[in-house]
Length: 139
Image (cartoon, rainbow, N blue to C red; front, top):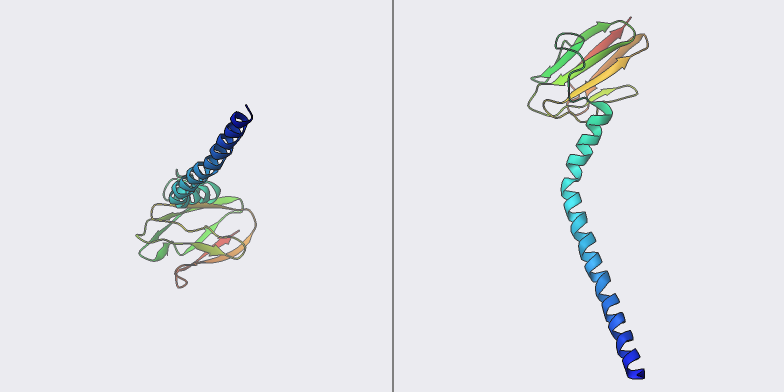
């Protein structure tokens, strides 16, 4: 009987030793899978925070396009409280950088909107291509 308890105890210890190995393997596989999806998850998070998947403003209505390495129009005037939308119609990524805020990286077809709620002049440029510049004037 005493031998039987020892055997059961040894079996229990053997089983407990195997579980952490399986658990580590499962966690490791999950990390690898999630790491592969990580970039997509991050991009979606950025889009939810700073971009929209549907146009809030129809083309031509407070919309600036990014194409061929230029902002069109380069200079834009709006009234206080106006939302301006940028659409990346270029084949390369862009990242709008203002004094105090930025768009995050915009892949081709991405959209970024910002509400200008204070009067002033807002100069901006592409953080990835600093020679690409624009200006928003808010009256």
